[in-house]
Length: 142
Image 1 (tube, rainbow, N blue to C red):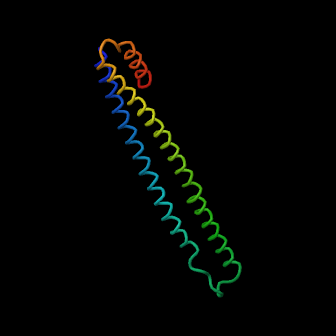
Image 2 (image 1 turned 90 degrees about the vertical axis):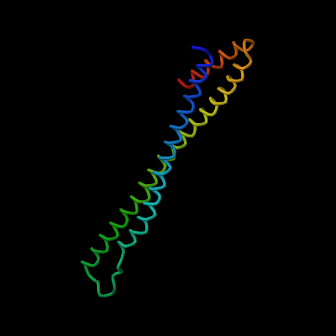
Image 3 (image 1 turned 60 degrees about the vertical axis):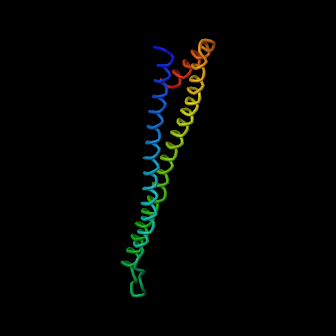
């Protein structure tokens, strides 16, 4: 396989991997946004658990048990909405950061491939350096 063919293959691999990473990042950002929307909606909706306020006519053991159960339900829902949702968002953000790091590595490979293109255009005087650059690119990508 000629250097030109190898470079074409390398450019195609970089483009393919870059598009794949962009798609993954986009999907993760959409998922995170949906979780944030659901979290905000849920925080508003759980306020309904504490309604209506019990007036003075609600007294006694049944009233106290009802209020305790209602407070327990509210606290449990609030923990889920804050703690669990925050955990989901943190894991998604961590994955996004990892994929963005991969994008940075691909960007470096893209620059190296551009350098290899320039070496290829120089002809025979740059063949040794071109071979080394292509080997480096293949090691990074394949």
